Image (cartoon, helix red, strand yellow):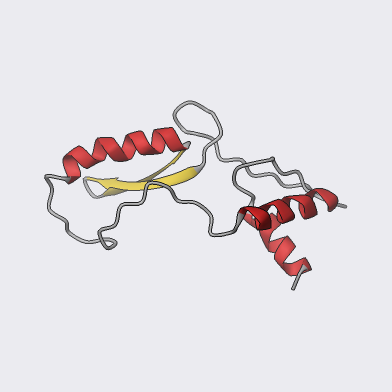
Length: 110
């Protein structure tokens, strides 16, 4: 029996397709939220007002990343999508490709 698995991130604010998962913490509680790029930028810009006046207590080195994109090239992603469709997987024309599909592609090509 074949299975088609499709993972779509959904923006937790408005229900549209999300492009990234943002992590943040407040009062000792850590949170994650799935957002499309505009909402992620809005969240980071809102926090920057407060972060600019705060003391750093730990965490990652201080670098500002506005986008958490894939390290896989666009051509490679297109090849993965084409292979996935030929092998019965459902993938969108753009956006994130499920890890299980990328893993299956890697296994088939190693």
